[in-house]
Length: 634
Image (cartoon, rainbow, N blue to C red):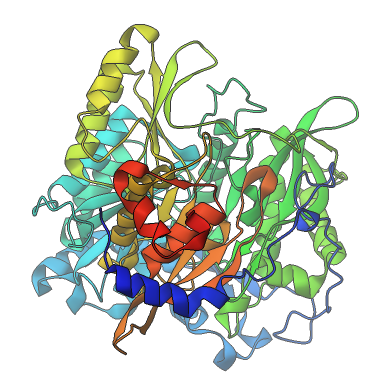
């Protein structure tokens, strides 16, 4: 029955942990914002007062810390650089020193020469580390130096998670040549693709030697990866049902598209916004469920109406999930007309660029730390000044929000009716991982039965759009032939999110995707969950929390720990109480250092019954197993 330890070991593990199963400080409803119109959901936040210091010099916020520098002979002609005489250069963090020596955006001029050097030297692992391991991230290319030297993860820009079938086929082609092992165990390194928590695609196995060809095929298909990594704005997130949502508040696609085009200068690269102090997340909310997860974005555009009935955006800022700090975005008390969204975003981003902290520790360089230092009032005044310079308009106060405070979350997966009468089919992608043959099959289904459009979700799943009723049954039958993907999703598997894990990431302590799918299957195979119950399990391999463990019903953070024999093994710290949408909350630590192979099944079983309302399946054998020593299972 998929049990990975003996009954005796389980009993010992549970007995030893029996007094520890008391969650610490579950977030209560009182901690969630319920104070519309400024923000629609969670906590009523006190405005930050600020300390009046930028933490780098005595100028406060009167003089920018960066300046525009001309670069003759470089394709973009300029870059933004830290003003050396305004700071102590020795105190700059390592990333800032690297950017000061040579801006990351300049690497776009070196694609051909770097590829040629990689061919000559036998791989990227034998080349200049600063260019290969750091600056190529400005093009979305992350060298897997520790795990798979010479290969790259290629992070793209798929704004609003929307792709045509033609684009999907191009992405499939890029990884197919590297998928040589035909291995689907989530442990080996090979060419594959991940659907990410930012409605994005990451391709794995890419080699620098072939980058010019890959780059051309990608750009010819209307896609880009410019400014996709390091200190840049990440992929723009919007409603995965934009344009087809029967409950749509606003179509987020044109706003994600315009923002991306201006941010990247239509894929050519934009040095004006390519040297932020740290990464930066942006989303546009168009759904009533907040499928877009606005709380964890640096800028969240929330649909609203002014007193005259004009649509626009209320603005939340500063959301972040980090190893050292997790905090939801807070209201800026600002409203902008729909068409002025970019000008407001640019005002926020350039304020961050000009005044953000760039010393050590780098963990204090996100936008929320700047707001801490400036205070919300001063931050808003500076943003409003820049916004007025760009538009001639005063920055208005927040208006009436349009996202409902209470809303039953709809199912994105399976067959569902679109606003136009056609159907979308949502497919579970286990832990977000896809392989070339699966992508080919999905592309064929979209082309044959749908309207040629595919969407990605922040949970790492995919939607095939525009399937008419007359083709729906045949389309679902075709979907069922893709062995690992599911259109009748089981609760635990559909809610499983996982970072790359140590299959590809050198920072991860555990194989998150492999374990995530295994334990989701264990729960689904052995327990019945209440009808309609969401079971969200988020796995991350290190404290950087790329898997967003704080948002899961259950969050699992990879660690190393000792088993019953005193051996160092893979383990997890387990969090409970996270939430999204109208019930958003940040989960808290429940139990630390649980050996994966020696106690996790027992812990998850207990939580499934006690916290998630699950009942053991009589047919699975787990019911008698639990009753034999767990009194709460009777």
